[in-house]
Image (cartoon, rainbow, N blue to C red):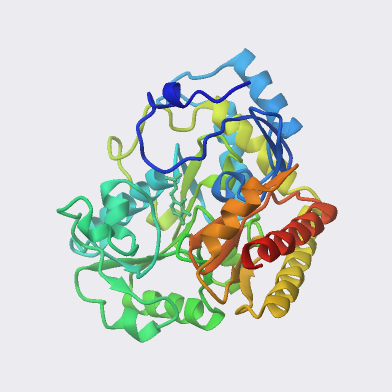
Length: 396
Ligand SMILES: *Cc1c(COP(=O)(O)O)cnc(C)c1O
């Protein structure tokens, strides 16, 4: 197969893409139009938790497609009930609303918190979010995000998202007023460069929000579904949030996301929330298949084992190359470089022959690793070895 750059111009230009098309994938490997294989450590940006085209999903999607694809969200369907019950049972939440993307789930969380504010807090609507956070690309979720420069992109922003600093409880306390209804944060800031909230901060945050009578919302679009070595990252902190959003790994590559809340906070009335594709059986059947793999005995142990191997390997590379160490939780990790050659490393890894490797540098001095949760021990070692090779080449 050849790559037709002219034909690709029919797609709107939203980012710089390499001149290749990916034609198939299996587990941790992708294949491009020339037949070249790549070890994929991006996995759709921490999305494909089971890697490419896992059998369980392929079978569930095929079986469901033959049965029923979309009866309408105004009717019940069995896969959505099944997945909601699995999520409720695995978490501290009582109710689930399915969405199609992380941003849409977060929009739902914002609406739910504001609705709760109307009912319980005299119309309080402000949601404190964190500097450097990422909550999505709709206008409201961009306003909620603390990504640098985003406040200037599509003004005016949606009002009511004051920014505090992660791991600085006083910066949160200082922003709380009568209009505050919630605090929303990622347990580990993903796009921000893999920055975990500390135990102390999360526990103080829960205590503070409880004391002030406001909600705690965890955006687990990236950290949830086993990415951090537990089904949900909030479970690392021994806290009970009021609202959680899921995306990415929940569908392992198909458009599925979810908004979860405790019973006391599930205050939507008829007409407040909905959406054409929300909770359709095709996607939720895929979600059930994914959940059952993640929830199988021994799966999280192997995620944690791979995480430890990855962490140790990255530390060794850091020591060898005089870098700044590594950080992360579970299989969401970052290698802190000692200089700004992250983009060169990413490119050299992709260009590597005969097999390439897909890496991500969210910042020039940082590489982020978000492999499939079922990556094998050998694949982790291959990745580390190739990374060393590529760094040698870039820095020679
Ligand atoms: C990716 C991401 C989102 C947005 O999800 P989409 O499915 O791209 O809309 C929101 N929050 C966090 C923490 C994310 O990592």
